[in-house]
Length: 79
Image 1 (tube, one colour):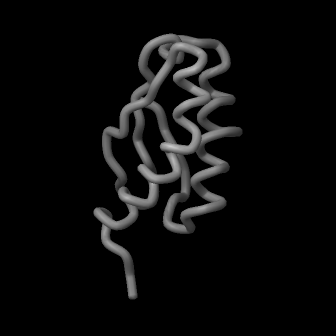
Image 2 (cartoon, rainbow, N blue to C red; image 1 turned 135 degrees about the vertical axis):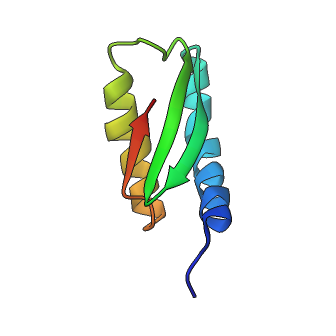
């Protein structure tokens, strides 16, 4: 049975609850903007906004974690 976006977003939120404490510990946060065609669009907040390590946080941290746990996630893009 194919999952709809609502179910996938629930799974994404569950996974993000695992990684968000690490981001918040550094004074940052992230907000989900939308999930469309396998791509999760997020906005970085707080200390993450404009941080030179933000790309690493997204690609090597959040994106790889989500793709490992949720096959429907094909990538994460910051807006």
